[in-house]
Image: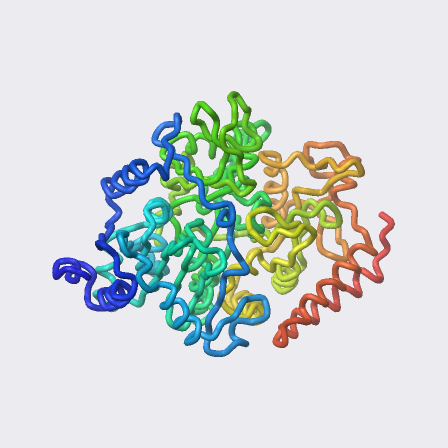
Length: 572
């Protein structure tokens, strides 16, 4: 149990919660982490001594391998436990909070015997921000504690804020026996608690991330009038030194990290793109405008496809002070994944969802807005998906409400980021389906309501880097060439670039705007298929029918969109 000194450090509220779990789990000892470098060194040494971590040739880099059945987010094991089932909505797995809590506490009995319980107090967001939030997480796994020490701002200051009366989120992770049949990641949004058992994979076990920063935060955001979003954000600086904030929601493995870490070059060498967030942002209204903060301190990204050619900014930081999970491993003890040159024999094959964990503070072009209390003003919002056909390279929606509708309609080719990867298209509204902590119909309504508060609502765009030709090859080069799309979006938002009106929205007038590739490819990228869109809208109606409370305003917009497609003359 806690010592007198530990109780003084934690304070009465946190101590009570910790002792309740300690009494059930019976850890050998309890350690409080405070975000110090020596703590990271201790965790690494312990993992190395136990041969759970492998030191790599890259400077201060390490390799870790989870169980093959615990190498991606387990959406089937993730639950929202609210008093009323309808509050969780049809897209979440729901459990009765009293019943599942009793079951989880049973699973946790003696689960930490012989282990150390680590207590991690943290702050999400800039410490000076009125939008930041605090929490306390418990884990009995050194690998989880190590990841969290990179991903979150672990600090005594969180405990000080709790002692001063600030509300907090409490999370418990125990690897137990890593039994996949008893793996649960359960969120109690009404209690601001999370319990995760029988898992050590980041998306299931690193509770500051998807669990707090999205699922619990989105529930809080609905009540408090802000948005917690699965979005990246960058600050683009034009050659005229104008600052422009862009946020984007893409499902996992759909190019979000590449856009977040884009490095303008070639014809865009006079431009700059600074990183605010690669994965999660919290959006707030201030003086009728939207501002974004990043709640995280680290990056937990997919390694596959990352190399010097596609993402030199990211490669620069990955070669030092990085934890690699489930990537490939060469005989020379270097990490390897698809997209890297293979110089040596592979002794561990990469999982398609191989990941890296690295501090965002090491990123070479981090926006100064990352540290500011109110963050970055957002001037354009992008939704995007991995689609081989139908969706144009980019189009601008006609209004905030239609932008919300297209975000709600978002569906993408499934990837390896989740265990339940069945191929085909997966509905993933706003890229938030796995992460929204309450009924998504109310989430859509919240977006509509949020837009009404704005005097200067950002324009909303839809992008698709993944359209293919008849031979199955990608038409658009992507990566740093995405700056052409960013430039058009900025010029549209400033009222400069011309566009062509279509039934789905404005597409670029590519006869007047340079996209850097041949006109015949552009014609394919911006081709609008009437029958394809009618099917898409029909499928959207089918999906939306699962929501009893689907917003009437979005149903109206969907009907208007369908009529426009039906009556549009597709001869250009």
